[in-house]
Image (cartoon, rainbow, N blue to C red; front, side, top):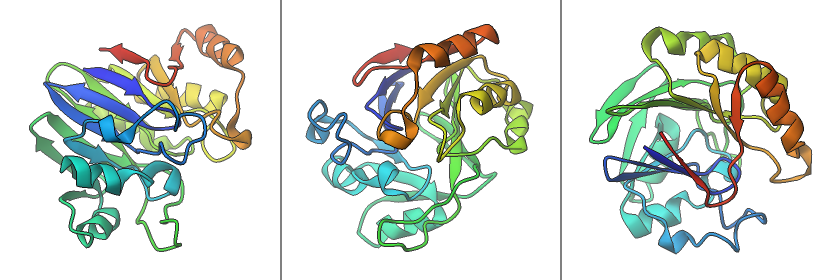
Length: 226
């Protein structure tokens, strides 16, 4: 499983030769828009945690170009289905086995609306169980006790957690979240994109290290392999 970061909360995940794209927000992200060309991105599936623009902005354009299936909650998939795109709806606690592995849609505490203010359903995260590795993509969320449910059914190899604070968990709560989900290997997201969520990278890594955890902060286009 290869995971590439494209800024903010956008990740490409390659597993078994199949390409997933999570929360594509590139053309509106001043930090990465000149570094990443959405025309060159591969996607067989697009996973959307919630409807906010900084997670869905480029989903339609990429889906039209690639023919990707959009996976998200019922309201979000209905929105894109009406636009003629292929979708697979999930809802909280539900799971489905795809050709790349099993996806479970899990709880998140946040809000969810499209840029025009229309309802985007309830926000969520994804637990992806691949053939050999399992990951948790928290999406935008506060720290929640529901995270303790995840290790009851899945042993994680990586947790992708928001760490920018203000709109989501900050560093301290993300450390607790990693305890709740039973995973000490954390990939940070939702930080530095704009002023409210800028962080001190070294301090963040130090705080995780002091708790016996590994926080990874990837540069745009940088990858890790599990």
